[in-house]
Amino acid sequence: MTRRYCSAGRTETGKVRRRNEDAILVRDDLGLWAVADGLGGHSAGDYASALIVERLGALTREGSVYDFIAAIEESLQQVNTELREAAVARRADVIGSTVALMVHDPRFVLCGWVGDSRVYVQETGALTQLTCDHVQGQPIDVAHFGRRAPPGADAGMLMRAVGVDETLYVDWAVAGSRPGMQFLLCSDGVTKELSDGELSVICREQQSPHQQIERLFSLALGRGARDNISALIVRLEAP
Image 1 (cartoon, rainbow, N blue to C red):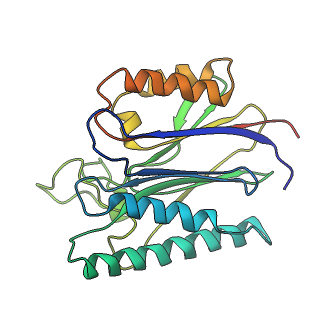
Image 2: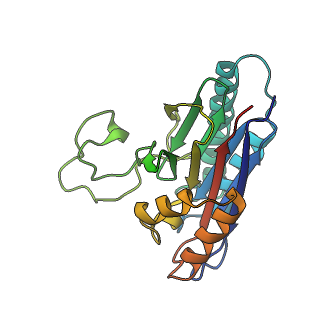
């Protein structure tokens, strides 16, 4: 593929957690990037996120972008099945992970997600969240396909992740593909420490994606860093 972008990514354990259960994927050659966040407090969250990144990173890109998306979904479904089987074998309730990913095509950008890891787009000074967290307590609960959350449910409870349900549903959003557009993929460890306004300021800075990532981590780690922190920035450039 002809490259029309530059990217940078980083993942850190943070100040509280003992291990990093996040994983990131940077495959500029495939036009594929991903952030996976293993379920904290569950068994083998680091294994789950690493397996997602490993399988996505092993894909090849042949045929149309739609063929590539189908291969991504098939790979994630296979990981979903393996994680459920591993949970049974280890007598664990859940072995799972969220994932947020981005696929570049010259005509458009596709962003997929499961869980509460996010994808944002920055263009003309505005930062917009493309994904919608799969958590309980939203005004309209997207995890239940437009139905309102059941009364009394725990607000903020994660409702979808790879490795949880027998059938995995990946949601997709479409964005433009214009020079100057910038995409931010991050785990919820980032959004626990930085507001959307602060993320927007970082993405507007006239710096390289690598410098922006370093600025983001400097701010996040300078605060509580209560969770693992992972982020990727992808900037589209003129061909």
